[in-house]
Amino acid sequence: MSKQKRFILQEKDIPTKWYNIQAEMPNKPLPPIHPATKKPLKAEDLAFIFNLECSRQELDAEHVWIDIPEPVLDMYKYYRSTPLVRAYALEEALGTPAHIYFKNESVNPLGSHKVNSALPQCYYCKQEGVTNVTTETGAGQWGAALSYAAKVFGLECAVYQVKISMQQKPYRSSIMRTFGSTVVGSPSMSTRAGKDIITRDPTHTGSLGTAISEAVELASTTPNCKYTLGSVLNHVSLHQTIIGLEAEKQMEMAGEYPDMVIACFGGGSNFGGIAFPFMRHNFTGERHTEFIAAEPASCPKLTRGRFEYDFGDEAGYTPLLPMFTLGHDFKPANIHAGGLRYHGAGMIVSQLIKDGFMYGVDIPQLETFEAGLLFSRTEGIIPAPESCHAIAATIREALKCKETGEEKVILFNLSGHGLIDMSAYDQYINGDLRNYQLTDEDLEKGLARVPHII
Ligand SMILES: *Cc1c(COP(=O)(O)O)cnc(C)c1O
Image 1 (cartoon, rainbow, N blue to C red):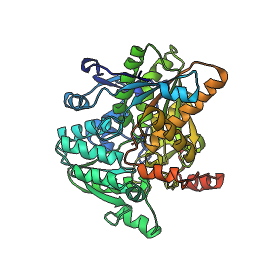
Image 2 (image 1 turned 90 degrees about the vertical axis):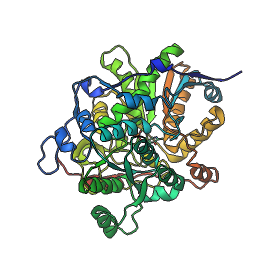
Image 3 (image 1 turned 45 degrees about the vertical axis):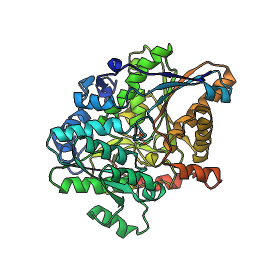
Image 4 (image 1 turned 45 degrees about the horizontal axis):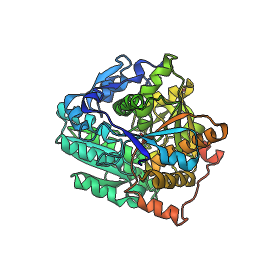
């Protein structure tokens, strides 16, 4: 008898609109500001590097529901709906009375949730006459998703990949090149920003911050080329709400409603994607769901960062964003969850934390792989090292339920599979991985260079 129970939506029930949480948040996020003028940004300012439609969505605090364009919906149907799964075998292994569900965003051919935003971003670029897109990528999931989406909509794509991740996960560069993209390790000598970083620190192994600087520079110096971002920004989380909107219908099919929603946290897009559609019922007071974002102990912006205006990138090219940050040149340890090695938290989530609608937990690397192994051995899916953070946080909560006897309903997002990350699993199994503990002095160093605007 099958121990897994899966809930899948029929094509006609796949949501046709995204949920724009900005329009319903009790307190709006502070505006992003221009680094030189210190004035709030307008959509036209953002459209200097982003396509215009995403620039508008970024600042839209008015429209609650935003139509998913027909060609994007058609592409979503290649892999959506994604299954909602009741993880009976995991529950049994933990001996917990909790009901554990996961939304499986690993089932598309790119292997992570990132394609949910890559498709609309490339579609809007095409609509607006853009010919080239560029971006940064860490572990490579965003670069892979964008490479595919660029091909779908007939765009050329150049990706700056964090150098250390390129070495740790060589197959992701292969995937990007298979879809026709150009891939460059960052920091590189191909941009002003890259040269400056290498001159300061010749052994720099790269970070999302360095790669963003390089991609932004390429976009702002190349005609018809737009920059795209796979996380952090409001419009990316908006596109990802397809995850939570489907999950809401699927939980209804299961006859339950989550007491807790959990996701791993890099820049917040898969978290926002699964959490925001449920959170709207907390705003009205109709539900009291707990929302937990799981971050690495080695990159703890939610739990140990500071709320400040900071740059989104290492060189300081981006607008200043109001967010929990560790400082824009914070260099996280080389943990395997490459997608979670980012210094800042994004504007919406940072406001939601301040307002008490959600909170972060930080998890050491070894605990995440222990969780990943248990999940693999019970549910048969090898999770991405990033997703292992969500699983570890879920296991912590499920074990608390075991102590108290509470039958809580826990929903977590399985943001991706780990089949391109097997060297990380090998290292864990061989006992070669370790935890990284950050001291308060380490944190102060990064925070000292945040431009103090608040
Ligand atoms: C990129 C990525 C993340 C982290 O990014 P968020 O924007 O925080 O979701 C998490 N999991 C996977 C599999 C990823 O590819």
